[in-house]
Length: 276
Image (cartoon, rainbow, N blue to C red; front, side, top):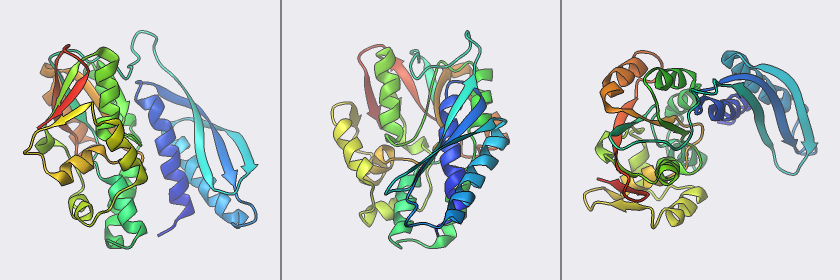
């Protein structure tokens, strides 16, 4: 199903996540649009921008206008500016040995949207997918700050393991991921079996070839899910182990029912990820 309003809302949610992943608060946003004026009716652009404007308003950011250029391909997003306390912002590195890793949303968005594109699954899954992609990471950001996050990244095109590798390399630490604890959409593994993937997955697999080690017990389906691209995914963050239960319980009690502890930071012994 193609819905311009939802397209705009998803793009805006994804754009806002960069601010939330640093523990920031969005304040202003500009529409950035590439528009194929000879191929699409202008009313579609109105719906896309309306979807983005509603998400900006939900975040509390003021939409200040934007820029539109003629282009053979449709592209839309927000350029977002936020504020953060200079002593409290969170980088995508800084995780310390002994910290645990928490993921706030299900994985599998890239697989599901590709499956929908090629009519491999029913439209009945669509509301679940849209809800996830249009859910702001605002609450997850507040919770991670409350419980002392040491590092954070939003999970998007590089997949869970691609973004986790930034966390490992930035602070030269080794991460362990427990694949059995990772939340994902239950419709994703059957689609992997049906050879459903994005081009980004192929690039991610190549990029991660020397950065990730899988135990033989990890299924091929789960390996794929962990490396597949996500659209407007959740936050992956590290925090002290003693705060993990409280953080997950609070996330699940608000708007992140899938939130889970998915691994830990083992030691400062080389930047690598082990998945078991």
